[in-house]
Length: 68
Image (cartoon, rainbow, N blue to C red):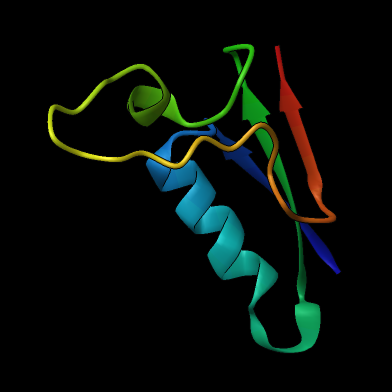
């Protein structure tokens, strides 16, 4: 299994994490590094008028996500 380091837990980093988690034969062991205290990037800091956001307190995966 190959370890893959993903820098940033924003939309791109989380999309990459999900893609690697669903890769055939589980070839990759993804690790996300995030400097902020929570993942989500700009989505966790914006509010949208007339829109609904789903707040996630932690990633729903077995892999390692380091924040902080």
